[in-house]
Image 1 (cartoon, rainbow, N blue to C red):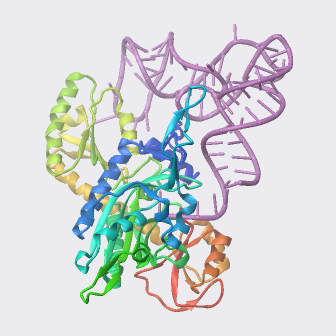
Image 2 (image 1 turned 180 degrees about the vertical axis):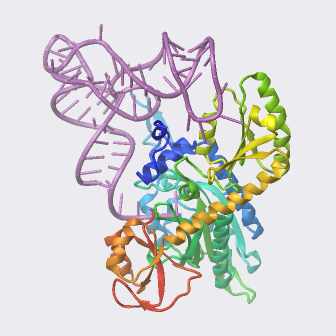
Image 3 (image 1 turned 60 degrees about the vertical axis):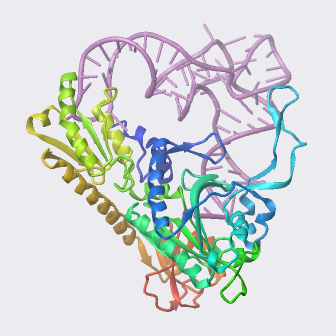
Amino acid sequence: MAKELDFLTKRSEDYSKWYNELVVKADLAEQADVRGCMVIKPYGYAIWEKMQRVLDDKFKETGVQNAYFPLLIPKSFLSREAEHVEGFAKECAVVTHYRLKTNETHDGVVVDPTARLDEELIIRPTSETIIWNTFKNWIHSYRDLPLLVNQWCNVMRWEMRTRLFLRTSEFLWQEGHTAHATREEAENRAQQMLKVYADFAEKYMAVPVVQGVKSETERFAGALDTYTIEAMMQDGKALQSGTSHFLGQNFGKAFEVQFLNKENKPEYAWATSWGVSTRLMGALIMTHSDDNGLVLPPALAPIQVVIVPIYKNQEQLDQVDAAIAPIVEQLNGFGISVKYDNADNKRPGFKFADYELKGVPVRLVLGARDLENGTVEVMRRDTLEKESRSLEGIAEYVKNLLDDIQENIFRKAKEYRDAHIYECENYEEFKERVKDGGFFLCHWDGTAETEARIKEETQATIRCVPFGVEQTPGIDMVSGKPSVARVLIARSY
RNA sequence: CGGGGUGUAGCGCAGUUGGUAGCGCACCUGGUUUGGGACCAGGUGGUCGCCCGUUCGAGUCGGGUCACCCCGACCA
């Protein structure tokens, strides 16, 4: 017990430190030997792959197809849309040369100054520009629309300060880009994809989210509207977990993507883009984990059930192996992923702690005692409750238990979040309380001045104008001016 | 870019007045263990970030330089 702190510091002590330690110790990822970059380890990547698979299926259900566009974007493309450049210019990595040569002392390489590119290439921070430059060639008629493409890729944003999964210089994501013949169709698509994200977050990640629309200052560079899902982490901070943008005709015009409509008249195409990234991994970790480590939702856990044998000698192990084989088979039959860990170089206690750290939803333990009684010990990760059960019908029981855990961790997260959403009318009170985290529903006069003042004085930002909240007019708590709606304000990652 | 800090074994750190390079974890070997992160014994592993200087002698003192981390402005 005294050693516990060596394995993971307590959540309450320093949430940031705890998070970082957990990511490393649960074998999800680590800091790379490259500025601001991350190595995603096999276990972490397995979770990301499961997320990808589910999301990809959902996209395809809505008619989206996958494609791939270049990593490098000519500098001139980026400057075509004025707001877009301004938003990203400060964090772009630039390729200026295409050759190295050995240095004078022949013990290293230097950039060959004669190999300078005429036009610099930008490592994509997002792909609107290069994709719309391509769409120009693909779209000529209203019959070519809607055009619905998605790409899974990496992007690079040279952030000043980085944190594993939450903000890294390079990150993995999907970016969907669609072109439409009408404004209405594009707006609908942007909202439709937000719903897909929200559904994924709640049903699969078991992370409750607030859906809404961003204020003008928080909008994506080049968008007319940015829709967002905001999740609450265990320290009460908000995490923007996915965004969907209605881009109007900004990119259509910037890249001259015109089509002839039914009346044979030229029109600019309407655009959306939408993305979620490996930041979702951060949301997953910061929503459910406890002092024993990760808690994974069964729907995304690479290992859903781990089985640990207890034995004193080879003979006993053989007996346990024989008893466990049919259980594994039955569980696999239900489509459940099982790991039977009979490695003999780790003691059972180590395995228990290790699989808890890694968030495996259900653990079965079977030893000589169980063999005599025809029982097995079942532990659920979300509550850490243990019980001894008959081997009879154990596979069905575990199957139901996984569903139960999925529901339970969502309910717990939702209860926690709902208990930390407050309506607030008084700015002094707000300033005091927002330090401790939580989501605040407050009236806002809609001005950027008020928004900026709140941010400067409290470090909290307007996360969104939430959907699905009954809105009544009121008074802005800062300016005292009239307000038509409450907005969601919180400190964020 | 502003403020603060750190560079010594794979990781975390100690190193006194300048005098043969240390500890814990991890790793390897052997044995005993195995129902909640095992124990004992032995062992492997280092251009002390880099350069220059002072000195008989530098991890330690001086100058320079590089890298990384933390706090602010930026952000999926």
